[in-house]
Amino acid sequence: MVTSRVAVCLLMPYAGEFSALATAVCWSFTAIFFSEAGRRIGSFRVNSIRLLFAVAIYTIVLLLTTGRIFPEDLNRDQALILALSGLIGLVIGDGCGFKALVMIGPRLTTLLWGTAPIMAVAIAWLFLGEQLNLVHMSGVAVTIVGVSWVVSERRFKNQNNFNLSADHPDSGTLTKGVLLGLMAAFGQAAGLVLSKYAMLNAGGTLDALPASFLRMLSSAIMIWLFAALRGKLIDTLRGLRHTPAMFYALGGAVFGPFLGVWTSLIAVASIPAGIAATLNATTPIWIIPNVIMFYKERVSLRAVFGAIIAVVGVAILFLANEISGLF
Image 1 (tube, one colour):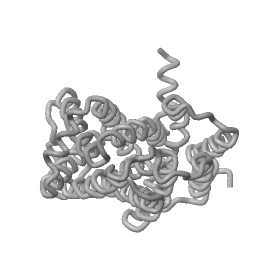
Image 2 (image 1 turned 90 degrees about the vertical axis):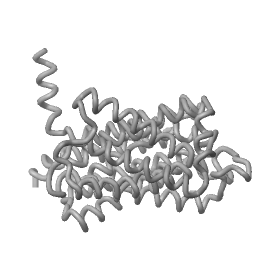
Image 3 (image 1 turned 180 degrees about the vertical axis):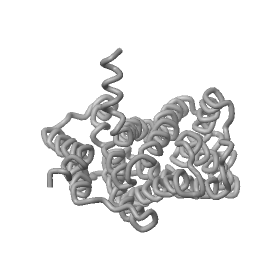
């Protein structure tokens, strides 16, 4: 009992960092689940349906833990900014990301997502006035180098990762897939910064769980309205009939929009957005065992070396204050 209390006390100063790493672990499962679901029914259907699953999960958890789904002190500015964050990050950003996952595969897509920390640092500096010191910037750089070294090991050889048919909604070229991956990274970075602003700087404070729910609810409404306007409502609903795809979509919803988004907002509320985004971007390190299990890939020495570099970068970020105190 005493040992567990000591452990909690030691970990509390790094709650934000550990939350960001938890996000990366959750997203490593999400990448596999959603790429498999998207291969079966298309990324737009997956993006739409997973938001419904996520809203249902958040509703149940909020009712069980607080007895209500909307916080009492929620103001209009917070609601509008979280809705904008959901549009940029979850509807547009994740929509591009899921399409890229199916088009060019999890490994190359997660490499492109690795640019999100750089974007987050720039956006947070412009809109929140957050500035990272030299040690923090060094940690960000080392982590990104390590992650990039891992996921850039293999070249994109085929037109798409799964040899999709020409009429598949997510078939495309390498160039298109790369652009979609970069758009996803921007959406992730901008959505994270906007969420932080809504939780801490929009006329009040808001906990991560209801903030995540509001992002998810507004995103679900927007994407289903978009489906209706495109005349794709019935076609999107047909995806619910595909049992294997729904299994993967539900698993992805638990690890992504629910646990992953929740822990990412806990992290960004506790530490600078650039650091949170960098630790979130370690997903490719955590995805290695998943890729081994799902796709029977072998881990090379290069991947191990890249993982070690990334871990060094993560350690620098964790110990940045202590390192800065030495100079």
